[in-house]
Image (cartoon, rainbow, N blue to C red; front, side):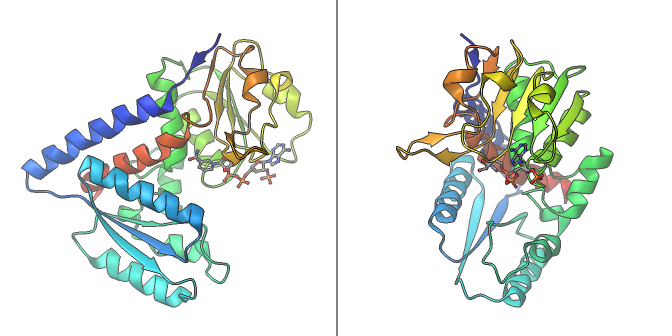
Length: 280
Ligand code: NDP
């Protein structure tokens, strides 16, 4: 049986560490505040925003909530962001994605003060990650590094293959693995002979966005497999990008869905919020 990497337990540990840090900051008279903006009322986004507010309450971070109508114009949203950029008491600004189609996400992300960019999506945050300087790191890939480290998985010198090259998961994931001295390959939809590429991986990170696409044939015996995907299957149950039942017998460690990468994203958001104080 492989080691099951328990994202629920590890994320709880991180939230407790953040809670302790926030309480120490409070003793020094410093409070931490996150502004969360949601445009429209997409049900999945509402669940994510609700979970973020709950996590803030747990760790002792104040959360300000801005629920804007679907018809909000880009200029109105940008003007709110500019206002929050100026407010000294606001440490982090998070705009829940996806935004309605009439709003340019890149313009919105780019308008956030990089010192308050707790999601780590601003081009400056991506740049600092790339050149190894302090800055915010995208929460999901940062959470995966924590999962690996806290589960005793050695990254340095290992063959790491990331399937997916999105700006929020695949690319920052590859940069973080490189920072940890992994030997990194990034695969995507144009990659030829994907199975041969993934079969080299000691650590395989799957962020392909296709339910249960990765079966045992893609996985080297004894590899560590991290499943970033979240989908609902035909029975309305959660599943990942990895066919868990098929892959578990061949790997040495694996993240389940749910209970693997998912809970880490919010824990790392809390971590970024608490850390924002030192970047400001
Ligand atoms: P995207 O759809 O933005 O990216 C998917 C990537 O997979 C692309 O780079 C694409 O390549 C590549 N890809 C698609 N099909 C294939 C294929 N057949 N072979 C090889 N590569 C392929 O997804 P995200 O990165 O945003 O998310 C990935 C998954 O992670 C999703 O299931 C999403 O729901 C989940 N997710 C989970 C989070 C969490 O908190 N646990 C947070 C964020 C995402 P190309 O670039 O060439 O198109």
